[in-house]
Length: 339
Image (cartoon, rainbow, N blue to C red; front, side, top):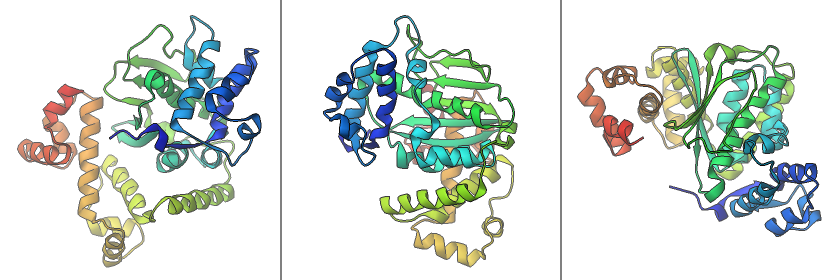
């Protein structure tokens, strides 16, 4: 279900991107202020927020000042520092490895950029960062998705060795000013994909950062967890267990409850009791993880259905088809065909 733009809340700092683009082109700031319905003082106020409709109008206000005949998203991205995501951007920089930063992004992106959801899946020797837009931004839908995926490329500035073999996959088609880059870390850009995603070799998750700080990482994680608790009931163990299940599935390890409890340093009965307090069960989390993995494989690979069923823990294709339809409302074959 799409989230109405008026129900989204962003920090006004995201408008610094459009502010910077207008200044570079020598355009008056009034074009942005009029679109947002804000004063310049409000635009500079760190407490100021905007909704999704204002965000859309901000993107549109800068559009006439982009250079013609050139890809649009890189012109916006030239004014996007990673720190524009506030404490999450800083946490990514403070992480020990690229993998730590990617997992932090997956965990907290909804707090600071609620227009998108993100999940990370390890498939064979590749990592897939799958991005799902949750709201309709109209004529700037494709542009915003290109900006969101393009921001990811900025991690090259904060790691200890050159990154390579990244691929960007966009669901939309290649328009006249669609995303393009000469960045050496990007091997290919694809259009007409089944899902919006970034893929890169799994080995790169171990690349260390040059800006890591374990103290700052712990401090920012606590601050973001506090923000999450203010947004809703704490589900810390559920989130931790979801990540653990995905990691163990990718490594071909057991999802038995005792093994999961041991990996978390908990007794099995304690694990079950705490999950019950958070309103979930181990069986439900494991089933969700299997179905999510199966859906990812359907949308991102041409793997035969029987092989996908086995990767999801089913020995019979009929049982897998039944479970998948119960979860998603369509069969695996229908899901692949519709995408």
